Length: 171
Image 1 (tube, one colour):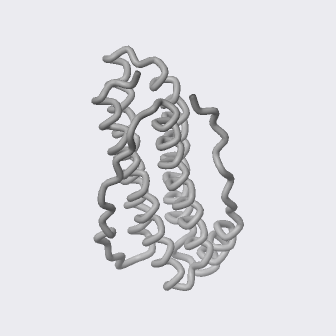
Image 2: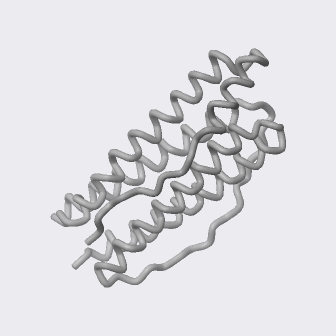
Image 3: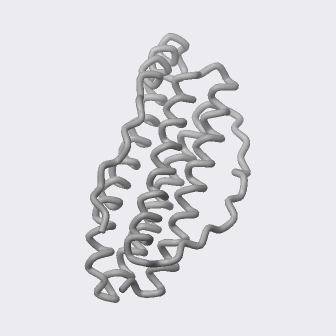
């Protein structure tokens, strides 16, 4: 049985993951509008990942007989005055999501909910990867983004990113 506090936190996390997808679609659209289709693609793939994170949490809750309560997903309130701002904002957002996952993990630990802790282990590792990817993209942009040839090559590199669905066994 999942503790009701854990259920509430997981429901909140579903909405956070869906908002993340919405936010990354907004960033993707910004880059497409700017003619940077590679950056647009990178964030579109990122949005797909976030949507699947929400779906994994939903499946976990369903597998444990818990009711899913979807909340409102507000539109991102963002404007970008340069190409680096969405990159910085995505890192901040990933750090926020990491903190949220850690909070759920802490609550699961405190209630001795070992099954949820095991489930969340994958998300803890995934968030480390998400933050690393965002940091690397910022670093590459800082190195090459102000040079038009470098920006073109970085944009081309990002255009090659493809979506791979997570493989996680849920109980």
